[in-house]
Image (tube, rainbow, N blue to C red; front, side, top):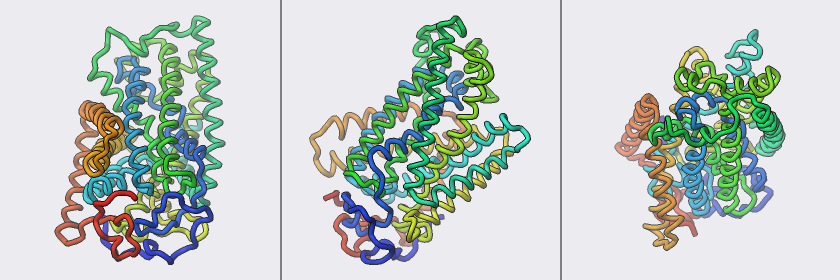
Amino acid sequence: MPLQSPPHPLARHGEGPPMADTPAPQGIESYGYRQELRRSLTFTDLLVYGLVFMVPIAPFGIFGSVFQGSGGMVALAYVLGMVAMAFTALSYAQMSRAFPMAGSVYTYAGRGIGAPVGFLSGWMILLDYVLVPGLLYLIAGVAMNSLVPSVPVWLWVVGFVLLNTAVNYLGIETTAKVNKAVLVGELVVLALFVVVGVAALADGKGRGFDFTPLYDGHTFSWSLVFGAVSIAVLSFLGFDGISTLAEENRDSARAIGRSMVAALLLAGTLFIVQTWVASLLVTDPAALVADGDPDGTAFYDAARTAAGGWLATLTAAATAVAWGFANSLVAQAATSRLLFAMARDRQLPSFLAKVHPRRRVPVNATLLTAGVSLALGLYMSSRDDGITLLSTLVNFGALTTFLVLHVAVVVHYLVRNRSRDYWRHLAAPVLGFAILAYVVVNANIAAQRLGFVWLLVGAVVLTGLVVTGRTPKLSVAGAPTAENATENTTEETP
């Protein structure tokens, strides 16, 4: 339960570790904060981070579920998912320029609308950020166990958690270097699958080339496809994680928004291509739609159809490494930055705002994230529905906070600042809100129920804070001291 602690010393000027080596272009000091995290990330680093977070081969692991949910129109589900996320990326780009600080939707909703709304947004996005590393570790553990049955799932989970925690502890530069190496490996495997798959289709394997992965008149309905989009969107989650690195970006504030849009478009294109090819390699699509993919092997079966067991094994191993190491590595980093931002504003326990004096990473938040991920991974590995349960919660948490993000753009720019840029500050966020709202309505019922229960718990916590005189407050732009840094912000970015 979030605690109201005294103003954290790291929020004051002139205290704590030395300033970063690279001057901060964004000026978070105007909000009463110190520049504590190391500004070392370039546009390329941010782009790679977003791609690794989304995982270019993410559809490998959930292909069967999306295929069943979309009635075989997997490519269409990913096209619509990319469009929906594109509007969200545009809203992220606008808010990251207005408030270039760590915290993602928590920061943008809190300062764009109001601190209590920011608290609830941060509470909901925790469903995504805190749970997703545990989900990734679990999926990777299951995949590795299928390749090496003698090693239990729980042991794989422990190994991945320890490895990623060590890399994140070494600093954001180490994480960035590892990201680039892993991304190259994922792209090589993906390129190999697409080339071999297209060659196999040309050679008469599978069902041959057609447009049914994009549109099938026999099964099409908007509710069906958007229900599948609610699953497919899991592959896109991660581009928003770039926003949590705003205080480690050494370029202009625009680099955050540009890298998010670029990562989304690149990943979305790769998702569409690979699922289209895989769909055509499914030998019995009717059975997959009817029976689903309980073992999560539909994509690997398609790879086996294309080139035999070696390609199936390669794609399964790549999935395990990508989800359990690369993706969970950046997910853990993003989660720790969110916890750091909320703790710095005294909306979570203050010990989570501690920054390592040499590594310049939020060390306690990183370790807590690792602990929660380990506990979740171990517990869910004992449940038959562990992956499904975590997936639905992660998606619901992300999508609901994206809805708030779109509202924040309209309130901050159009209502408060009287913006006349009606496309970026009204039309785009409204369209993004409408698409996501339809996806949420058609989402899994269990996800809706569990998500609203979590929201209700957050509302109770917020009510308790208000009743006890500890209403969430955020620093005002231009506040020179810790004292006026506690005022609730209603002002705009300089």
